[in-house]
Amino acid sequence: MTGNIKWLLASAMLLVTGNAIAQGSGSNSLNINSAPLVDKSKMVKKPKPLRTELSGGLRLNSDGWGVFVDKGWVRSEERYSDLFYNIRLFQIEFSERKHPKEAKRTTRLNVNSTENPAPFIYGKINNFYSFKLGYGNRKLIAGKPEPGTVSVHWVYLGGITLGLLKPYYIEVVQAGTSAIETIKYSEAQKNQFTDDRLIIGSAGFSQGLGELQVVPGIHFKTALHFDFAATKHSKLAIETGTNIEYYTSSIPMMVNQKETAYFINVYAALQFGKRW
Image (cartoon, helix red, strand yellow):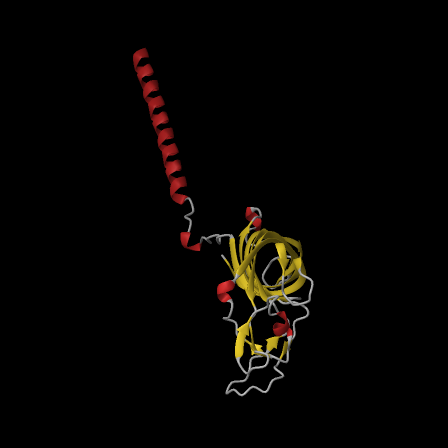
């Protein structure tokens, strides 16, 4: 009898344990099946942060003009990368510098020719160009660089400069004859070069290209940069600042004018491009 009671108790315990396990398993299965499904079609992909800028433009200097191309990289933290707070800049620029005393004239001679003589710049010795490579930064100082707003940035950069000197040629009549010759400035021909009674006109841009002289130097510029692009993927800005250049030798530009190795100018630039 005692043995039967023990067997009945053991059987009851097994039944209770089996039901509990079955209920627990069913509950877990129910939870898994009832979990909400994620609609992947409604997931919004985060836009790729902007990292790079490429732009170019025209620069009007107080002593000439220039064209340039800027390449920029974002320096800011990840959360600011779309807003272009701080940029590392690499710049290439080509410009022409004109002397303050330059003035175009027309000949005083009665030239028998089917073509009108070209105007000339009296006393000009060389055309002076510069090719610059610069590296620097652009930093936000006011506003927010967001579409539809204006942000103000401080730009500073510097680098190397190659000054390019091209002799300026004119056409003149040889004194006492009617022969025409093309000359450039030299001490031996100074009197003929500066006698406007003998000058017919400029010999043209191509004259002297094979005689370019290179004068190395350095440059530095600082400016305020006003960015007012309509979208974050576009670039539209106005920049105004000061540029300083120093060369390893003095630059002869005009007759009877002091030669100098350093130049300072102010400029305004229009800049446009894209970001990605």
